Image (cartoon, rainbow, N blue to C red; front, side, top):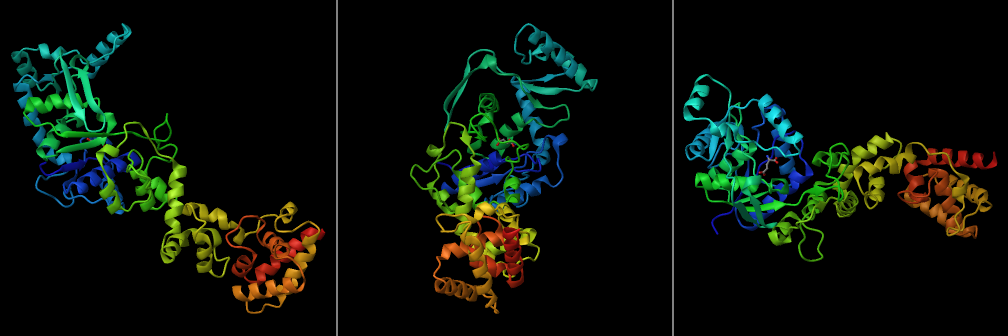
Length: 483
Ligand code: GLU
């Protein structure tokens, strides 16, 4: 096989859609697997949709995800430029070549003409496709219009008989009757190529051997292949990828905040977890493995493992991956990443954030979940007295007042407020009093936090709250019971 050359060709919209990121990832994996070259091409021919800074979002996202390109706008390469608008002058000569050979033609129809004729066809219950109106113009008529400066587009002249077919490496044999193919616009009135034309010219002139992209382009590919043939270009291999969906009916949507890479990073997902999970959305390694580094993905990746059916992106599954990745993090790295979330929730209300991080690491699924889990440090919620009752911990409504009083007296003896000293004082005192640990520690935890589930138990929490605050909370809990 000649050297593999693939490309990721995003349009600079300002955001990286997860579907696009998955395409980039599969392109990258495929290319590395085959020791090929991975090319980044920016498709910005739709000037109306131009967004300032959008190419940086593409660079930063890919780099942050560990997806590195061999040729691209910022690093150059043998087939530069890699930004479509800078290749603007390369398309027209090919379009003219197609006009010469009868595979394309000038079209002078105005928007109004088209709307009018479309309406008439649809009124009759038909489906509109361009009616080859301008194909009937004589060369004199065309020249006259060109000389008069009448705006035009250039359209592909698709055959009206026969079939066009090709073999996709994922979807298999795809055939389309030519009379269903639309005479699509190749060059727009502003002189810019459409995606439909630019992808063919660029993929050929950049030497792309494997076109890897979303399956929304599958049905247009027969038209592209007609262009390849008319221009005398060899047809590349195609690998179309199943659409990334939220569920079996819905695409990921920006409205639901689940479509963009940045949505997930903001919520506190780890890039590594996201990439690992995304790799499995539409591909499987053929065995039970779920955890992969990028190197392992490259090793395991194969086109045969790509699925044809829509790929469901399940946020719960991602969260599960994320929690696993967080658990495996180096504690220092966890602390660094969690700090802003701690600060947001605590504003200085505990004494040893480092210790809190130790307690929180195994309980963090997503960083954005942290503030809610630790909000009680800043302000304890109202205590529901029912919470004191816990059969398993041998704590009851009756035992609670005595248990809290015991905690107070034992903790009063702790002057150096360390976790070990608190532990020591409480456990030996409880033993001496002939009580069960749960009978005392459970109500203490409730009195301090107002909730059943907390990072760490009563001892850790008393330590983190500090002496003064521990007593303040204990007293107010006892007052509440006698009120
Ligand atoms: N610019 C197109 C997109 O963002 C690229 C499609 C392709 O890979 O050919 O969808």
